Image: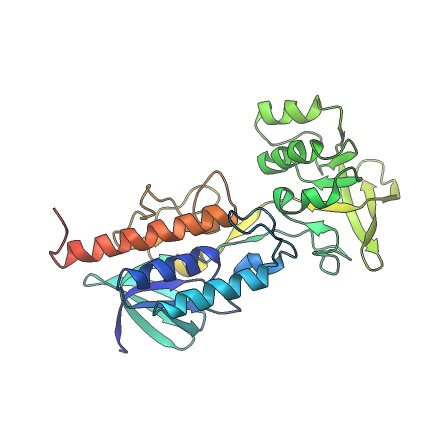
Amino acid sequence: MSQLYDFAIIGAGVAGLAAAQYGARANLNTLVIEEMAPGGQALLIDNLENYPGIAEPINGYDLSDRMRTQAERFGSSLMDASASNLRKENGRFIIETSNGPVESLSVLVATGAKHRRLEIPGEQEFIGKGVSYCATCDGPFFKGKRMLVIGGGDTACDEATYLSKLSGQIVMIHRRDRFRAQKALAQRVLTNPAIEVRFNTIAKEIRGDTKLRSTVLENVVTHEIAEEPFDAVFVFVGSIPQTAFLVDTGVQIDETGYIITDCTMQSSIPGLFAAGDVRATPFRQLITAAADGAIAAHSAANYIDEQRGQAYR
């Protein structure tokens, strides 16, 4: 077994990088394990304009690079690897990675959640050019424009309501004949004059040139197909939390697969923390992910002190 770390972080998105900085500042021997480029979902953001303290818009790559540099400057290490399994033995965690096992006294899961996609032609090509999975992130770029919202759950209804404050030209489609969202949220959409709701409707293709121009829609009852102009398409058909490697841990998750934590970000397994989009939380933004990461690092330091009998009383 290689060296023993105090704090191992799986995932180098905003939550993981914030935790890395705070963990290193707390004098924890901190390792961040990331299978792709540091930044996570933030890398998809073209212009980030709502992060406190950053007045001029910044793209997600630059923000992530700054956070990575900052975390490394404080002493955290970054490993380019994927995690395939996690277990706890004799009070220590063993993370199986593509670069071999990693042993740590505490672990933070910050692997995030991937937006569930439509998997239709044009979706991938126009991400960042009209296709979005975050209304609060990208909605302001399309003020007064014609926008399509796809989905029928709580998030879709919430986001459609938010977008209706930016434009009176919102079309919302759902593949079934009624919303699956909470009744209060659904009713708010149905009575909103800025939102045109179409049930039994799906998107078949997204089209454009240098940016999104139109979407092909199909009524699943009549099978009528029509191409309509849109400036933006917002997709809210669910998310997939990245927790497959935790299947053998027995960690408590909610009905949709997100890790349940307490206010210290600790999961049902002592010493195992979760932060950011992988955690069961009512609001997912970069600022909340960073806060989760900072809290998790602080809590991990306290946990380690307790295990060593050095907790401050």
